[in-house]
Amino acid sequence: MRNNRGLHLIIGFSLICFAATSAFGEETAKALSLIPKPVKLEPRKGAFVVTANTRILVEKDSPEAAKAGKQLAGLLNRATGFELKTAETDDAQPGKGAILLTRREAKSELGNEGYELAVSPGSIVIRAPKGAGLFYGVQTVRQLLPPEIESRSPVAQEIAWAIPCVQIEDQPRFEWRGLLVDSARHFFPMDSLKRFLDLMALHKLNMLQIHFTDDQSWTLQIDSCPKLTSVGSHGGPFAMDTTWLGLGKGIGSGRYYTKDDIRELVAYAADRHITLVPEIEMPAHAGSWLAAHPELLCTSHAKFPEPKIGTAGDATQRIAWTAYHELCPGNEATYGMVEKIIAEVAEMFPGPYIHLGGDEASKLGWKHCDRCQARIKAEGLKDEGELQSYFIKRVGKIIEGQGRKFVGWDEILQGGLAPNAVVMSWRGVRPGWEALKEGHDVVFSPTTYCYFDYTYARIPTALVYAFEPLESLTADQARHVKGVQGNLWSESIPDLNRLEYMAFPRACALAEVAWLPLASRNWQDFQKRLSFHLARLDVLKVNYAR
Ligand code: TNX
Image (tube, rainbow, N blue to C red; front, side):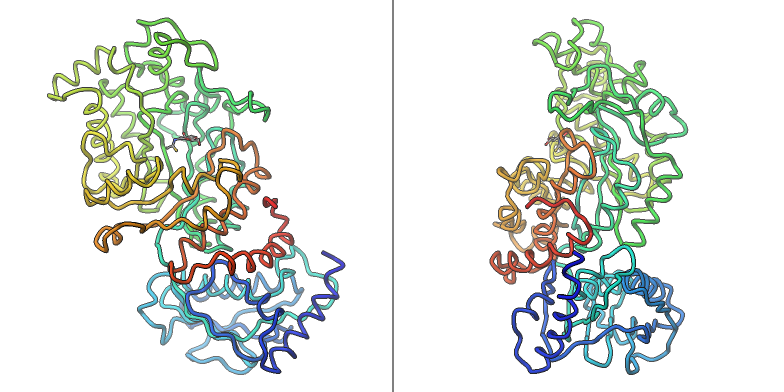
């Protein structure tokens, strides 16, 4: 990077001169390489140059504007070494040499996340109806600055901190622009999650689902059930071992997030306008939960030979294996514990959604469990399939009782689903279509485009970019599509370094799928912008796939 600094000084000035002579050349294209691309962008002549004298003005008496202004000042000061501060103003227009952030005179049709950005040689205005819009305006200014703005300490050499003149009007296509991190298969320390949130914010991604629990470990503190972490964080007895992947031991590290950690993380995400979606997986993928609470096992576990460690064993062992991994929906005590857990989860996470998992229940253990069979009878259910539906509806009610919406993987459709459930379509897009027909809200995260734990050979960035979530839907159905999510299951992702490699640049492509209207999407254009955007990720030392 160091050798590039002189170059950037030249680039900065040539940008100013070049743009000033009215032609928009390669350097301008480079400076306008935004990801996701704004909905409307008109280049103008010239540039605004940030100097030690630049003033940052924020709307008076608006904590939202004050916060976004501070974030912009922090971003600029860190790399430039300037000491820019913010000041309040009543004006809806900026004075000379100022950057103004305001909600005054904002177009309400820009909604919760939209913004306008006007950069002229004399001033900059970020205008948005809501705080999130101001924040995204700041992110766009960030991407319009030279990549060195991402430096973690003041850059020694002079750089022209030039922002090319533009007129931008921008707002997202979808409200759910998500990624999933799986802390249960491999634990991601707080620093890693924060870094990931930073990178999401840069790309205007706004939902982070955290898969806190699975067979391999339970990673969220629950005060009323302390064994979940004291025992469960070490994993279940027959958890699938990922050692065979050659990545070290993936089974329960014994680490977990404390309540203090979560408070910190929630605040960190909120500063970046990112909503955390906690996933507590049930009824399957519950091996660590059942390791901590064997009193909740289906009675079937004792009727069949034990599975071998690390495998599900043969057909009869598989029944016991299942019993060790799937909660017993026949046992009333199961619901009692779910209630305690969900109450604490709701207390920790202020966002509107709680994810209950719901995928891959084999139900084998239930078939041979006295309690499950008694429950099927008592409730007049047809079979284990309807027992799953009974379980999901009950847990859904518990979540709704906490004033939250519940989200689940698409298997929750089986046997009938409560109408308010949000369905995440992962086994391709068809389950999502089915859910839409039933009137559910849907988030698309299909294995066919959005599984970022799969290799790049299987899911190349171009394929992610080609994903069209509204394909073959009616306008009515399309209204219920909340958005898209890329999933980073971590069986084979042991640390942040690998996480970044698997996520980027696919998450850049997904960010644009989630943000930009289909008609404006263009792979050639994206590739060109991405090639410049990677220089920014280089300064950020992101370990993206090349
Ligand atoms: C399927 S996606 C799973 C996860 C695995 C993932 C691996 C989903 C709802 N279930 O438990 O980690 O495949 O790609």
